[in-house]
Image 1 (tube, rainbow, N blue to C red):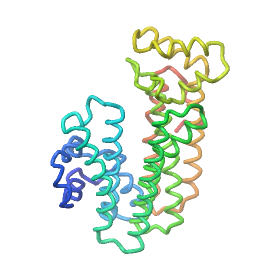
Image 2 (cartoon, rainbow, N blue to C red):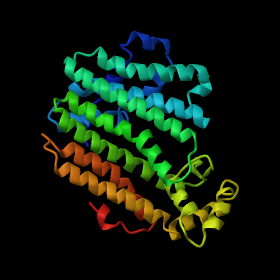
Image 3 (cartoon, rainbow, N blue to C red):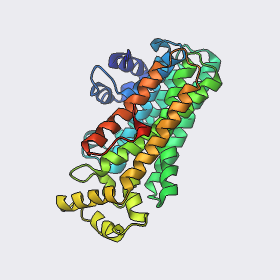
Length: 320
């Protein structure tokens, strides 16, 4: 996948805002990505190209999305007490202030860019929906709500708005009409759900045990194993609290995730969304659909590789 936005472009754009000078440490958050910034920062550029626009047109949305994503990461690190978080070196208070500053910067970048007023208003509206939805999702997640219905509420509120707004804002800056941009928003929503479910698959099988095994965290596979009707449900519930003490216990619990159908359940949801993405893409009239098709494959290829690693068959619904 050809991506033409450099880390230098993003950094120059963000630190052209004089207010960002209050946090000289913030440059580290961007520079650590190296010359090639994260793929999720570049989603607006891919959407912009898909509707016939240029990377330069998408740059304000790329900068805004990068700021919004880093804002979320800073907050997540504080909430998770992450030993690698920037708050460890600058303090929780300053890290929280920086998170607020970055979120505000995402709007300021767009507002201060040379964009047609109607497009600017639409992009800012999309960013506002993303920011408010993501914050609501964080709050739902912090409440540790139980049950699958609440799991999907958190997924749809917390992660999906980021991917949805990333594609919608890029399409708007590329000149797409609002209806087409909204369909790319829908595509981004599905992408966000695919990313979350795949993360759950990976995290459930990490060694040593990932934080998803804690009782205050929700993982689709672990949730399934705890509530579905299968012979090892009670045994699995007992193992969950012991996975951090003994790697053999973790491996036993992970085997139950396979035998009880939890992995198959996660794969089912991934395949369902993958097929929905393909149907949606086939119905879009894009100037260059290849960036969106390539992006879809980038989301799903690691899943196929994971299944091979687990010696599990790739279902036809997930085949290339």
